[in-house]
Amino acid sequence: MRNPSKAAPLGLALDATGREPLHRQIGAELRRAILERRLAGGMKLPSSRLMAVELACARGTVLLALEQLIAEGYIVARPGSGMSVAADLPDEMLAAPAPAIQGPPRQAATMRAGPDAALRIGQPDRDFPFPLWAKLLEAEWRRPSWAIAGMPHPFGHPGLRAAIADHLGALRGFRCDPAEVVVTTGIRESVTLLARLLLAPGEQAWMEEPGYPGIRLALEAAGVRAVAVAVDEAGFVPDRAMALAPGARLAVVAPAHHFPLGIVLSLQRRLALLAWAERTGGWIVEDDYDGEYRYSGRPLSPLRALDRSGRVAFVGSFSKLLFPALRLSYLVLPRALAGPAEVALAGGGASMLGQGALARFIAEGHFAAHLRRTRRIYAERQAAMIEAMRTHCADRLTIVADPGGMHLVARPLGEFDDAAAVRAAASMNLAPSALSVCYASAPACHGLLLGYAALPVAEMNAAVRRLRAALALARN
Ligand SMILES: Cc1ncc(COP(=O)(O)O)c(C=O)c1O
Image 1 (cartoon, rainbow, N blue to C red):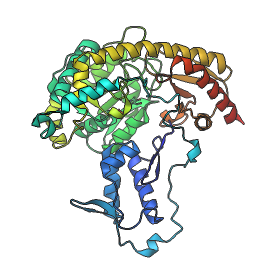
Image 2: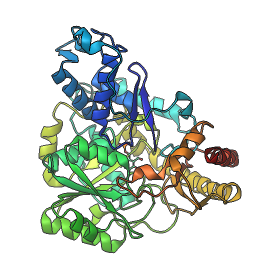
Image 3: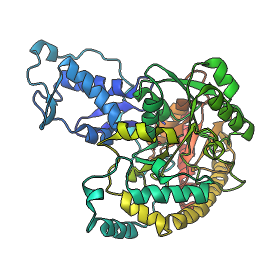
Image 4: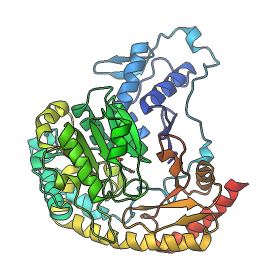
């Protein structure tokens, strides 16, 4: 998952999976750009919201970086006219060569796979019904009420919140009140918001090892210390977590489908985690990032459905289910948090632009139909990928079926450097992710995460043959 993102106007190179917190990377890169005069004195900077979009991170992360640079005098902020590079930095500060700032390793532009690259995780099928989407947007925005266009509730569109509550009741097996549903721009934003509400800076939260590096960043954005707890074949191990960080007050887990290994958290572990929360007043964030995709076996009840004492927040997202630029996701709050969350989000919240259209998309049955269609084709694509991998890459990688999700994990049979494999793959416009970056501490297992959901069956063999050629390239 080495994923250097580049903000075109600013030219920042970030390593979303590096150990350095993202806000520090952004701060260091901006400082370097100012010192090297790539950003001239007086130049107006894009808004923090735009920077966050370009850098694919939370706006809060960008704001943390900007606040530091404002405090240091590199950037000036003027009410009403935004932020600009300080015009009066002393010349000796600007003298080349720029000081060596410890930053993430830079990769040559040729190493970056394009937006159409195959095998990228989290990419859904491209055949989304956009003409229908455009009609729903138009229907919603031709004459919007002022409650939508002018005075939106910070928790989001009431129709969408009700549609989400209905969907969860019908498909995920738990009832919730639309008043507990908050629309957000992503799961990471949901996690940061919850961590801010529930913990004080410096407190500890457990996360899974391996796990999604974005969760660590989301916790750190709230000033919370993430403690990585190794999973086993039954998933997250509460006993291990309690021994490692007994004072932790929050657990972030993906029980339906662990990322990246696909483990379903056993019922016994679910109950142990809930008992911990009840006993200690701890909190659980249930990350249901791709729980809608299950192809065989029965899903276990979500933690939220088993939660008797209101300790579980459930977070999910539409972006990977529909199309990534949608950036609409949701969190279901523990009831006691509705008041504090409203205070924390006052005057904020996700953009209303797509919310009403999404509410109609769900209420009119298009969402259920879309899930039925994509479940069928993703199951076919997964099977096709397994067959192609066994045909073309069996001497290097083994792969086993996963009862759910949108990606597979390929494990090496011998010595294997997954970062080198990812770089070689990028040069062939393939974008698998490295398993090793999902580990917070050594030793990390190496392997490749292969997204198959966006790849039609007819194109599977060709992509996997290119992967084989890339693996040969990485070896030499
Ligand atoms: C475990 C997990 N949680 C959450 C997300 C998505 O986070 P966001 O909605 O912030 O993009 C992902 C994406 O890969 C994930 O793997």
